Image (cartoon, rainbow, N blue to C red):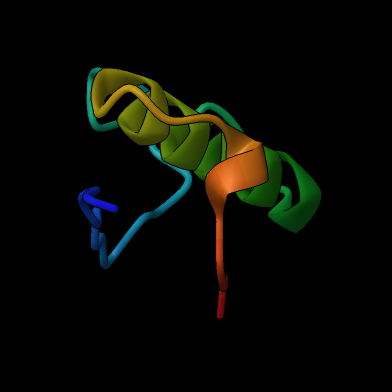
Length: 54
């Protein structure tokens, strides 16, 4: 069996323009999770492939 791993770090609640769209924590957390999903998609993965988030 072969595969690959994708490691990321420092995912923050910025948009693609590196700007916060909101000062609210919940909005920034939601954006950070959207950013994680975008990175996974770029690598050909989905959220179901996640092993751990901290």
